[in-house]
Image 1 (cartoon, rainbow, N blue to C red):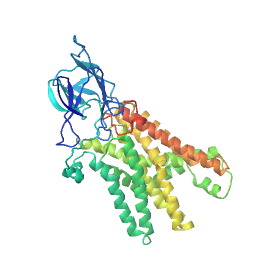
Image 2 (cartoon, rainbow, N blue to C red):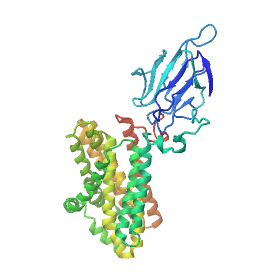
Image 3 (cartoon, rainbow, N blue to C red):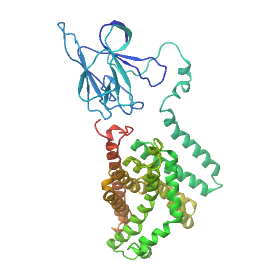
Image 4 (cartoon, one colour):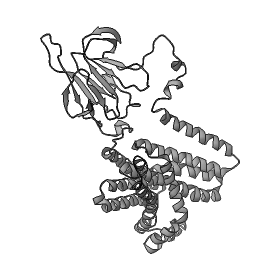
Length: 448
């Protein structure tokens, strides 16, 4: 930082994270280029916490023509293949362009703005050193009480929600310790399930209306309680999905044909349960078509990310109902409340690689069918069958070997495979998304 009067061009960052703060000046050097982006080796570093739409190496400004004294007479800006583009005075830059005094540079549609100036100025400038913070000798109220100013940050609410929700659930769980085990387990299950879903939400980077997410999970639970037996009759008794007979033989220690088990599981668990979980997603797909913008985009299914988010929410609802309404109750009857708690935790945490992964993966194809209606039925068939296949792999992994350790290894592999399919779907959905959301850490995404 230095105080000086100069004829050299400079960039003035006119958009600030916190409204009311002073603009930041970056002086340009006639002997080197500067790169603007989120990487630490850029000359102008933009914090990824606040500027998700800026690529790691977004744009470069370089000296162009030189005069007789080897001083640059012009400067040009080049986009470095950024995801969200670089705009000069509202026009998208596709390659390089010579800058003129007063040009407004914007990184992405909603990104930071810089003003290119070349007249004499006297200001605090930055000669290629990333701005980390500026503190004078005087103390301000906002420095002593940070919440006074930071609550206007666009990310403030987003950063507060996880901690606030955690405190809320902890207080409620304290109220039921030792007095109401069932309520305690439901609260713990919902909290763990919410944490799993939050991971998927952060990976997708596209926000849906919170009430649509909750409604999807609740609708899945309601469908399970009211319609599941009807669907089960079709898949398990009309179609070859009767798994009760083989399950009874297995409990008696009888040898089971792995192929017969897999086929029955494919119809009686995979196809049945993925069909049930997809119903709320299709319901919101239809509801979204009846609404007006912008509500329709926040609620309906218009692209693969929408389908993944709603599908994952449906998987959360199914997991909660199946775990707390069935398996935990059975564990409590056999081994007491501790056994139920020990089963609850791994089943809910594992949902991200089981039910959430399957239904989220199917949701990707539901959203893709919305983008490509001419291939709707092919896409839905592929998504339905592939998600059901992944589901069946998990249910069948522990039947392939008589060795307990090998069964655990096979089941772990099936879970990791399902999670890998979900992550691949999220990454592809982000690439083709109309919004090109940037919340996913760049090391998992593309180079931009």
